[in-house]
Length: 120
Ligand SMILES: Cc1cc2nc3c(=O)[nH]c(=O)nc-3n(C[C@H](O)[C@H](O)[C@H](O)COP(=O)(O)OP(=O)(O)OC[C@H]3O[C@@H](n4cnc5c(N)ncnc54)[C@H](O)[C@@H]3O)c2cc1C
Image (tube, rainbow, N blue to C red; front, side, top):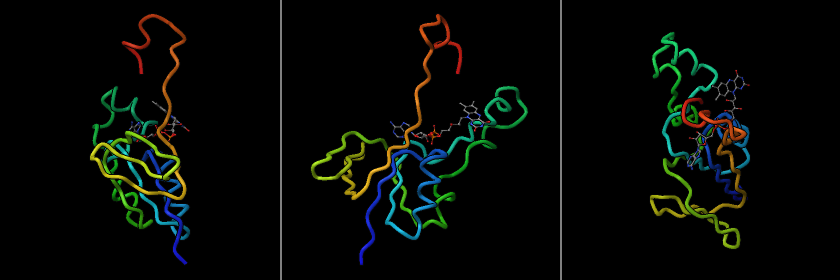
C-alpha cells in the first residue's frame, strides 16, 4: 500500500513535531520560507547578547533527517482544496492527501500605539 502524502506548511515546533510523528505513516513534505528553525524561547538571550544568533537557529533539514521527510524552502501561494494541491512560490505544485497548516500566529497588539513598531 502507498502511504498517504502529507504536506506540512511551517517548520516551527508544530510542523517539525508533526513530521517526526508521521515518520512511519506518511510521505511527508515540509514547506517553510526559512531553511532554519528559530528557537524562540531563547531569543531574549540573543537580544541581551547572552547568545549568538546562530545558537538559536537550527537547520530544518538536519531536524528532519531521521524522519525521512522532504523539505522545500518557500512560501505557499495557493491551496487548491478541490485538486488537493499547494502551489509554492517556486511555482512547484505539491499534491497532498492531507494538509497540515502550522504557520504560527500573528501577535495581537490590541491597538496599543508603538507595540507594532517597537516590540516583538
Ligand atoms: C520570544 C518568544 C519566547 C517564547 N518562549 C516560550 C517558552 O519559553 N515556552 C513555550 O512553551 N513557548 C514559548 N514561546 C511560544 C512558542 O515559541 C510558540 O508557541 C511556538 O513557536 C508555536 O509553534 P508553531 O509551530 O505553531 O509556530 P512557529 O514556531 O511560529 O512556526 C511557524 C513556522 O511557519 C513559518 N512560516 C510562517 N509564515 C510563513 C509563510 N508565509 N511561508 C512560509 N513559511 C512560513 C515560519 O518561518 C516558522 O518556521 C515563545 C515565543 C516567543 C516569540
